[in-house]
Length: 263
Image (tube, rainbow, N blue to C red; front, side):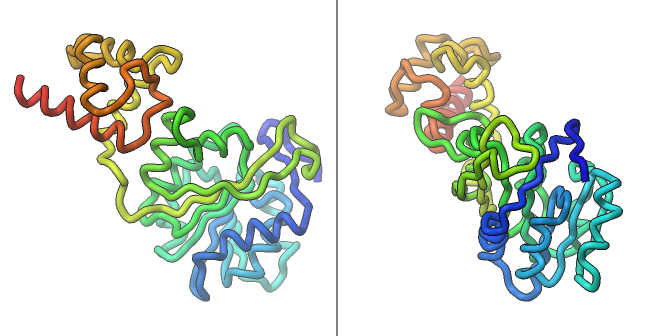
């Protein structure tokens, strides 16, 4: 079936890679675990998932594909939902807290899908997504390369990078390589979500020094005072937002709260 370019459809048909993705998803699974598949497309990944899960619930936006997919898996416990995953109530759809989420997702809605899954209630036990390699690396980033999405995701899940999938493995091939991202949601966030509100202000202009960005906020703290705060947190006063991890932001937030309390 011809792909729909506007939906970012690229078919992965390498069975070894598809099986590897399914294996990664099944690590946290048992006999009762349900698999939520996002964007099953032609069903190539679905085939591998059905080997591991007693039931697969597949959400497909393209009505052509949603209509044809069941014909490829007669007698299998496969439920097809023709819908936009970003408009679906996952908890109502799955009706279980024992599920994993898997998908070869369109590049242009990667962030919304990741945010949806890590904030769902209940959250998946495991999330395995094939996405643009650059985005996967950004989410899994460490010191000196942090981004706001990296902090947001790492605050709520353990993050691992899976195998790289070359563009040539897809039909039609995309312009860039892909990579598997594996998320294991945590029971509770590592830091209070309000800490990330401060981080968001720090990333307002990533090329500028952190002290300059934060001085432009409504907190009423001067650039010089921010530099002193950074030193108190053993953070280089010349640091940029990308240099700070979750615990750095938490400590900086605590220092700001102390100032607010004394004032």
